[in-house]
Length: 426
Image (cartoon, rainbow, N blue to C red; front, top):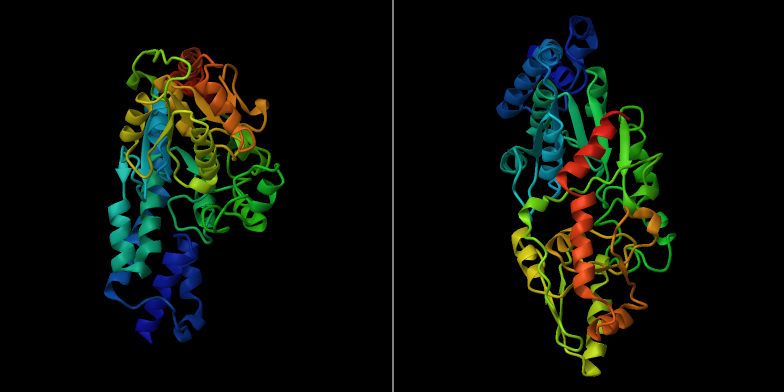
């Protein structure tokens, strides 16, 4: 009976109740606990993680406000950017540091594109999930409580925070409650799949991300009700719910903030290619998912033009490190970003930073910042656009130079840092 009660006590402390004398007394007075059959795992490892979580929870009550008070006295402001390993995450932290903040990144997984993160817990997460899956929620909350002690401002995407979400997408409700309890600032951002619903996307027009999707529900949140459910608890906690481009239509009362920075210091000054009209036109295309970029329409257009005798060459990069993609862009005349989505991707900014003209589909010019050198194309007119480029009806060097200037003006680390400063004053 004592073992059963202790197991019940661990379960309540580790999963339900915040630490505190009143909570402990409430548990001890509950006589039904002696007859409670806990569903908690009985492995020694579970008890180890539960014990650690209880100890951290109890200490967190004192340490979280204490460390926050110390940082305030020292004039130090710490911010965390996480946890989805988006390519721009380290750059956003650098923008934050330009404002004088001690910004760090934390991720729980890692893609092939980049691994430049301050706290990469992907190996630890894989080990916990693989060896002791029942202990993963305890481990994740321990990580989050340490983050609460270390940071004052949290920047999350809408898909999740540090703790495991209750559904496929969404920030854990307990995580949001603790952020609010300890008066942490929360700013949320969209990257696409975390907010894109099928119903709203199909309503945007003939060409959209969902039109050719081969497996609805796999890549994005898709379901309108699920998105609303994931957003509902965020609204009262987040200081600003940010979105940009085509993602604005999915986020409730979004703050329009263009948060894609480019480290322009990594790119060479513009160098013209001096391609002659009628010479071979070399194109680059770097899709993660071909059906989201309209790749099949691009291939068909190139094939049709080649049948007419036009010398077009397509070079593709897919699932390779970002350095290889940028190296490819330097070797081509034009970069084709996407033809169906309605807004350019981050690849377009990188191509413009290299000095290459970019073909992309933008649904509305209102979504763009001033100075964007747009070569707007959909599957309906991509063949005509490529033929015009081939015959020299566009000055590709002039468009490329304008693109590089646009990125330096609107998407440099300093430009985004200035917008981030205004966000903090929001």
